[in-house]
Every structure is written in structure tokens, then in C-alpha cells.
Length: 211
Length: 282
Image 1: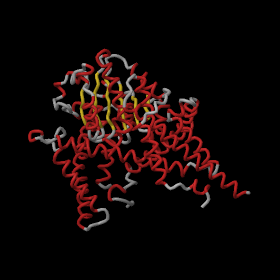
Image 2: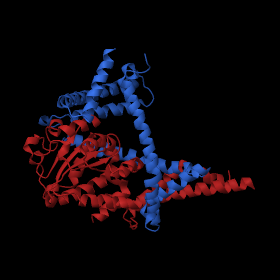
Image 3: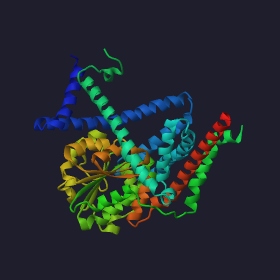
Image 4: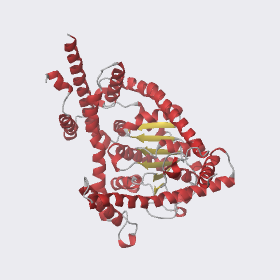
């Protein structure tokens, strides 16, 4: 038996057992391991910064496609990191005026804009996709249009029955489909976990394939 | 190209322009359309009204700046509702986040509402902000068993939890009576349920963006989720129930007009499609 597989099995069982059994020693070991994991996750943030720097640094060096955007990304990543660094004693940190300015006037509106752009895409996509070319498409068209209309006070104030129709679509077909998808995904996750626990699934050890 | 073909192939740039006009017009000239109160917003309102006295309530800011256009209005309205009842009902409100931008979004809220001035609630006694809890689902699991260990100091004043009277009896998930998660994705409700609802029985209510709503239906049907606030329209209804029209109500006319455009375009596309098919058959 390989050592990495044993470590995987040990760590997995240490997290699974406390979910079903109340054994103080295992509970305590499990909690300690969760703390270790949180430390590793936090350290991974720095790996992400290094990786981002490498990818975009190379693109700038080679003048690859869209390299000016990479310059903007690196400049702002460094600027936000410096002014937001938690050293309140020298005026840095989350309360720093420059940090708050960049957050409120750059990141905040950009984030909202990116999300709001979806409205344009969805409008265009609905126009192209909602066409009753066959019975299946007609069902999607009708149910989709009812849900869209039921979400707008313009329609529901004059046609209150739309809310009842939307509630039925939400409660019956949508819930039934959602349950099916969830149960299927959960069964898949359980089988993957069992395969990993038993050492059959080894892709995570070296990035793909089974020995 | 015939007129019917043109109606089926409207250039997307014209659609974007129309969408822009349809959204902008009601923002500049509010139409004041009537807003019927739906089931979701009423359930949310009633649920918060029925929270027992002396309850400990966690408000989790599980979204970042990109979710603000849709979720920020409901966050503001919910915090008004909670702080307004905090003293009379002796609720203890703990604000935290599993999304790293969550505390920054809440900072924005605190620049607009001063809970001490408006509701006489005392920070550290009636409410507290613990900030970002890293680690996603692992962080949730760790927080459930040891809140003091995971967030040793508060976010706003950087004081040890031992110095905050509100935290004296709040140490694990067993001490929490309700979690209100306002969220855009992962980590979100499924992770919360696995780590807090199943093992500890903590009830949940969730505010989410419109596209997440279908995925929430099974949790509502199973009873694991007690109330759902689905997007901006329901937020506007909730603001009206609170008699506090705000950001969401201001945006409802724009929601109506953008939805009207979608319905008109779908109608145009289908009328042209069936008319052209009829011509081909003849």
C-alpha cells in the first residue's frame, strides 16, 4: 500500500467519522486537522498571487494577446495589496483612504457592471433561444415566459394569476427536476469518495490517470 | 432579406440598445407601477417577525461586489428589520462572511446606516461583526464547533471576543438560533446545510440572486430552508412590507421594463417564425 493513499484514507475517515459517531478523541483530532487545513488554504492565497504574477508577467514579457490588460491587473493587484496590508500603525489596512477609494470607486462599480452586463446578454439570448421550433422548445418557451412575466410587477399587477402559475412551475416541475439532479450528483460524489478512499481513483495524486 | 427574416434576425447591437433604453427610461422617469406582494417576500417578512425573543441570529454576507446590484438592497432591508427589533426582542446579531469581500460590502452598508444612532443598538452588546472566516466549507465546519477559535477577534474594533458581552454565550452552532445567508454561490446554502443544519439543526433563511432560485426549490420543499428571498423584485416587495421603500423599489420599474422588452422580443421572434413557416407551407 502506498503512503499517500494511506494518508488520504486516514484524513478522509477522520473527517467522516465525527459526522456519524460521537467519540471525543476523534472529534478533537478532526478539529485540529480542520485548523491545519485552514492554514494550508490561507497559504494557498500566496501561491495564487505568485501564479497570477507568473502567467501575466510572461504575457507582458512576450507582448502576448491583451498584454496591456495584464499590466493593469498586476499594477492594481500590487497597489491594492500594498495599501490594504494590515499595518494600521503606518496608515495602511482596510480603513486606509486609498484602499477605500479603490474599493468604492473602482472594484465596486466594475463588479456591478460585470454583473449587470448579463442583462443585455440574457435579453439577446432569450430572443434567440425562446422560439417554438418543436414541442420541447414550446414547453421551455411557455414556462420561461410565465416565469419572466411573473417576476415583473408590470405584469403581475394586471395579471395576478401569473404568480400562481409561476409558483406551480417552481414547486412542482422545478423541484422534481432539481431533486433528481441533486440526488444524481450526490450519488456520483459518494461513489467518487469511496473510490478515492479505496485507492481506486488516483488521479489527484499526480494529475490524471490510474496506475 | 424579407421583413419576416429581419424580425427573426435582429442584430444583437440593436437589442442591447433597446435594453439600455428600456432600463434607463424608468430610472430617469419613475413609472410608479403598483407592486403586488408575492409569497416569498411575505414569508421572509413573517419569518423574521416570528423569531423568538432572546434569539442569536447569524447574518452571513456570502457575496462580493458583483452581487451587490441584486443583493445589497435586501441586505439593507433585512438589517433594518433586525436592528429595529433588536432591543425590544433582545436579539443578538452576529454578522460574518464566508466570502472575502463580504465584510467590505457590509462596510458600505455601515457608511449608510449608523445602527447606534438610528436604533440605539450597542456594538459588542447587541450586535457584532466577526469579519471574513476563511476556508469555505471547512471554515464553516470549524466555526460550528469553535467560534471563538476561528474568529478570536471582532472585525470592526479588533477586540478579543472575551471583551464583547454579546459573545459570552455564543461559542458553537448549538448556541445559534437562525442563520440568514445572503449569497451568490459557493460557499452558500448547500455547504451551510451540511455543516450547520444537518448536525446541529440550525434553521436557515436565504436571500439569493435570481439565477440561483431554481436550485433552492428542493431545500424549501424539504424544510431545510425556511424562507427564500429571490432577487430584486422580492426585495422591493419586502421593502414595501417594511414601509421603507429603498434601493429595490427604485429599481422595480427598470425590472418591469427590461422584462417587458424580453417578452416583446420573444413575441416578435415567434410571430415572424410562424409567419415565415406558414408562407413556406403555402
